[in-house]
Structures are given as C-alpha cells and as structure tokens.
Amino acid sequence: MTRSHLVTPVQDALTAFTQGCLTASALSHTARNQPDLLAALPQRYADVLLGLLDRLESSALFSEESCSFSQKDLVDSLQMWVDKARGLLEQA
Image (cartoon, rainbow, N blue to C red; front, side, top):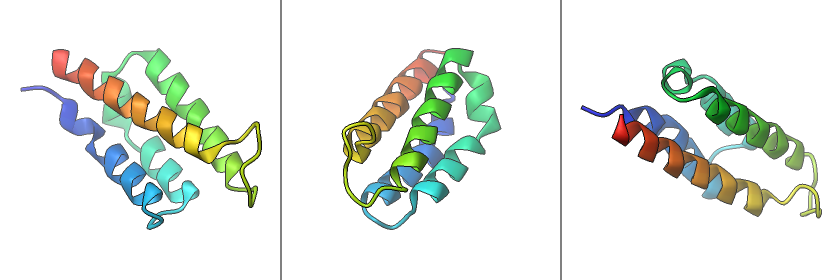
C-alpha cells in the first residue's frame, strides 16, 4: 500500500483555499502540521513546501497581485508540489 494518502490533507486545504473557503494562514497551518507526510518525503520536499507557504502567507498581506507575490503562481506551484509528492509516495 502506498502512502500517497498522506498528501490528502494538503490537497484538500489547497482546494478549499482556491475556492475561497480557507485563508492562506489556515492552508499554511494545515500543510505545516503534517509530520508524517514531511517525514515520508526527502528533505528537499519539505524545504520547497515551507518556502512556498512562507511566500503564500506573505502574498496574503497584499490586496492586489504584485510582481513578486503572485498568489495564482504560488497556488499553481503548491499544486505541482502536491502532485509530485503524491507521485513519489505512490512509487514508494
């Protein structure tokens, strides 16, 4: 059995965020509090995730898109992270 289910809370939170049902802070909190997921992945995955979450939280401070904090790009990057993490866990 794969451990790809470990990604589900992050995917669910990301979906809720994109639908406007969850704040950036709540998404970040959910993603950061997945110790089993982060332990199951190589350290570089945790580093990338934490960096994306930091930027997403910072982008929430701006009312409009800015060139350095595009929420859409960050959400796309987070989705790519989720997809890659799920793929890696399915291979394990």
